[in-house]
Length: 614
Image 1 (spheres, helix red, strand yellow):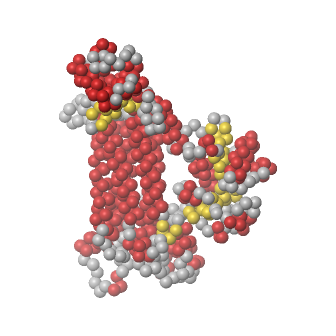
Image 2 (cartoon, rainbow, N blue to C red):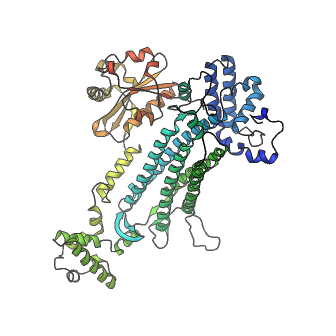
Image 3 (cartoon, rainbow, N blue to C red):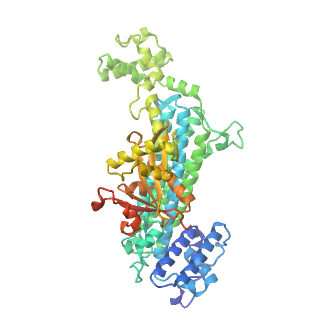
């Protein structure tokens, strides 16, 4: 069923219909289309288009359709619908008759599909962030289990300087961490609501677009209707994040393919991520890694394809933009599968310590240390570099590593070389000298592992509900941050009264963070008294506390959780949406009476919707 047939005297040809219809791929957006339709039904009911009974009937039918979709009980593929929007409308019409035909009032497929796609991108963004964090956690675990192993670092694919295997692992943790941050940044642009923009010029009905955006979990409505329906830069940003991350995964795959080869033999990959040869029984092929490397180009192609599609389009909507979906659907799917596979590969790795150490020693990677040794004796670096190169040439001729040359052999090249040189040529010594931040020394590696463990929420700390014995620690934190005017002061008697509201972070027996979930009689809850001790900041404790309290809110079947804060970006990253303080219940605002800034409030209100509709 087409949504536009009234102006036409004859139907489309079968070939045009096949060429034009998008249901075979945009059916992936059915839950987002239903979610947007529920929110739109509420918006037009408030605008007087629907009666309350009609809106409730539509909402119930849409919920039922969503349940069927989630259970896989809809035969969408064999439908005659043009796209997912017409499919949903047809199913509603079958159930409700003419009432369903009112749902599209004031709405265009242009703002509808833009909204659906943004909702889908938001959801995928969150899932991808979780996958990236899981992969980082596995790499940190691999680093921690193998930090004693030393192997050659490479430049130009030649052995350069020895590094700890853990240091190699942590390099990719850094890359994946930036990939995660790119998703966080992209989500800020995704998180604007096009619904209510109409085909291109807005709508004539009295639609509260801010409330509509809020209902759908967006930060705000799109502010220009032309832009809202015609740009897909938010898809490009997600594709760019996918392409960059896939490039990182491809580089890691290439490293591991080489490390696993017979020429290097630094690692062994598990049987579960390798395959054999149909002809050569001795083969154990790194197929999982080769596929990750291969799929990288496929994701790059999706980004390039959409850039070319969009580059010449006039405002506003054009049917070319139907080509925005298959590429992003495929790219995100490939990225997700590659992250899952990369995680499984990392968890299968066994490091061959002896082979690593042998290769590090054979590569004359301690030649730089010999040059540094001579510099410390007063030799200019350029001269020391030349002497060290001559020693390497001699050692190659003797088929010996530098550290096995006799002292008299070394002294042929400089009389300043003494017996203490051998400690500087030792692999452990020359690696562990590099213990400044970012170095490969054991101290720097241990510190980096500890930092990542905290950031990823896998450090040795506990988030739990507070007990009365935590009172002193909570009071200390609350009063400290109250003095800094970051939260409201609380008396010890008040803290005792509301101790059940609090959760704490405990690390090594010390309370180093706290927060409370306070419930108002309206059913609204507020996160307040959030604070982490200065010495424990930067480890993700604040995030962990908020997530703990949000789980509590879910268990209590609360609908909304409020935060009043001077750091709205922190709560935005956790799924909170901007709200208007003036719309808050009076009881909430009364709690601000003790605040020293009550007459010049600089706090922002944000709301978290605990039980989203779909």
